[in-house]
Length: 330
Image 1 (cartoon, rainbow, N blue to C red):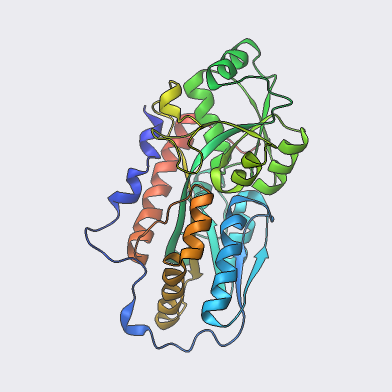
Image 2 (cartoon, rainbow, N blue to C red; image 1 turned 30 degrees about the horizontal axis):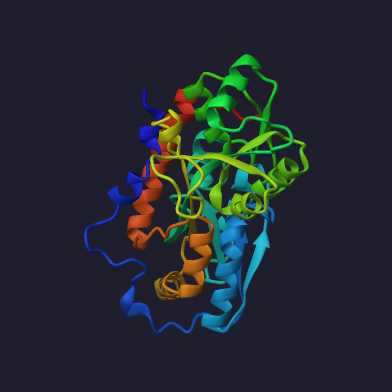
């Protein structure tokens, strides 16, 4: 089975109707929302990929809407703890949720979730899409390139470990997919978010990580960690010197991390429209475009309906990957 076929960037295009305009709700644009601060639940600790996109979005939202968008980091259980809290919030538009690809994986990894990402939330905007990147601590991993790295792994099974944002996250499954395709074994070390995992990678407590480029970007540029490759079949414009997976002999290794905004089910349609309007305005701003580009990210550019269809497709797609890889909670 070709696992990468389940996680390709083409999944973004399959749900987009030709010529559809993203972030448009039109007729409800006269809502008075917001008339007080809005809380954005981020289901991972500060310093991770979701946080890296949520914070600049929050700052720009405050300028645009005239009310603060307060980040509430609720890490734990691979992002499912924060999702559970958000699902139970009052559906009044004053609690929003910024989740990620991990939340389309969770249904296959956590059989007793007390929420349903497809039924208990209203999909509003796919805000960013970034490739995964293989990063290592240069003091713990001496390999200069992916070929040398794989050779070392095959000669030393289990000697190296990789950190992740938690069991069942894209970081975890990206590692499992890499192990399958390279016929290697690396020990998985789950954390309560990408931020803590990255800090341990930088400090040398773990050897490597399969991270979303958004959270690793500043550390790669600062020389604290080394990028060996980005996933997919093309180099990322933000890191033109880092080879892509296809170039290093892994043409089927394509894993992306995406981030989106939801509201609790029952949120009024006029409020949904205003949220979408503000997110669209942010997406079109030069300020956010520059930040996204520096993190190697692209905007999703899907309408709310298309985003919902995309999430449903991702739930099915990741279920197939989990089954084929045999990934389990650690």
